[in-house]
Length: 234
Image (cartoon, rainbow, N blue to C red; front, side, top):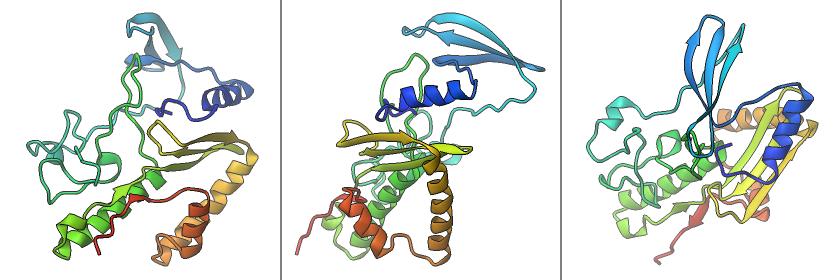
């Protein structure tokens, strides 16, 4: 998952693949694609070619590596070489103090070194924690109290991954290791939970409520909070 493993996710996902007769290749890069054929080079632990694969297909889907927006990446000192915004612990640009950044555009170092370079994913709740920190910090700036712009996102992760009639759920607190909580489970209940969450999330958005009180208290009871630190200067 690009997270340096969460719980027993590797074994459980491989088991799910085997149950559905799905074969997989890891540490691989696509070298070229022809009509009905994909050519893949599998790499060893040192990042050197290990085996060549010729994979026939009738339908294929490629997900290109993420990169930042060209217009943003062109701003001097704002981004890393891939175009992701460099931020401090308060979600603020390291060079431009009036710029805050959240979500997929944020530069996060890879969790671990892999034969084929990968990036760290940004999950939904993790992004919500980023936005919460930004809102608190911008509010402090607008109030003329920049010394109070000290909110920090927890970068906690809660994920429900649907896999047809089953699914996988994980909680990583925080998402980037070392973690205090490292939990992963799969089962049909995740598929049902995903359907329920979809309806609940759309209801929240339609009513303009990002974090209802009951949700906040339930998550807090589980040790899941959006903000790591809020300094009271009163």
